Image (cartoon, rainbow, N blue to C red):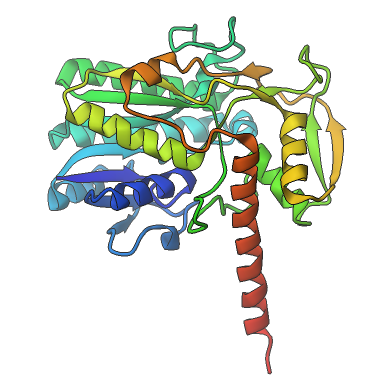
Length: 337
């Protein structure tokens, strides 16, 4: 039995592949490497470079490796980009997943774990937000993920597939042992940007809006460590393997930090100051998003290990420092003698 991980060379996908291999699972990866890195995949894990919308590729991988479960990460994830290119997001996130599901059904794959987002809620009526809250996404990114959730529900009902939808809140941090982390150039994650500012790679960090009705005027986010999130996928897989019924679960810690608090946590962890510039609000941004985690705690055998913002910032800084050292070493090696 093998687990197919789509987008397994990306940020969250690579951490999940690492966790799966450490748990002794057989894993195979499909990734087009548009934002992922082949070096992030553990040695010995087969990588097929291609698009999950390619049903022939997917069916061939499933058949060749006896795939019984799929964990689907592949897709586009930047809210502002989705506002500029909505059709691109519906293609990459919804249409591509439709093809992936079609291949899975034809090959009798019965377990499917889907990487979704808290962006499906929009601005929630209550905080912390439960999975039963109305879904009113504010961006094509959130809408494309919600459409996929609906499609997955319908497909599962029609064909007997079991699934877990994991709605991520704000993912951050890096592998505590420094093996992998967020390496995408131009990544838009708040904590990643703050870490780049702390390490001198950015002249400043923009804060989009300080006039929200929150304690300091900036948006509130529920951060989850990427390694804890990876373990949630393993727990979801075990749940399905044990006969669990289809379910949608929030992935967060149930605790919110403002944008300004997050920046301060990075300043303290790095012991460095950096410039902060206040900018206007951005279309599609959600004011406050904190997870109600009661359902995931009741459903999965999952206990977070790194649920502390300072720890998340420290691991992110350590990874960023490693990237900078490797870049500097590569530049030195490229200088002619």
